[in-house]
Image 1: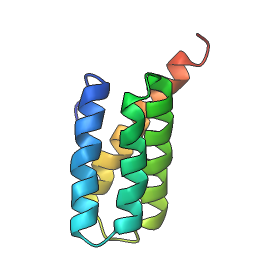
Image 2: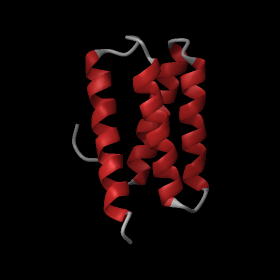
Image 3: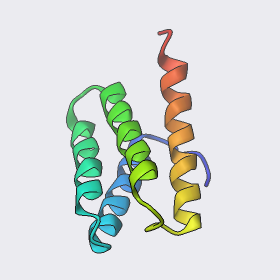
Length: 92
């Protein structure tokens, strides 16, 4: 996956992920993603990124093969980008 260009791009990814999780009956994971999405309007980008990271890690740990290998790879890539963004901002 190409690098996300902004928090808006992350927001859009999370929205589509939430819809897909919900469609597959993974309601609890969808709700975790929805909570992260809600943080986008908090006015604190690091809060949104942090909650997004928590949500994606939880999906990785709890999806138990419900995602395709491509979806898991995309999720891992997005998580790595969030980690990089947060680690890059940790000294600021």
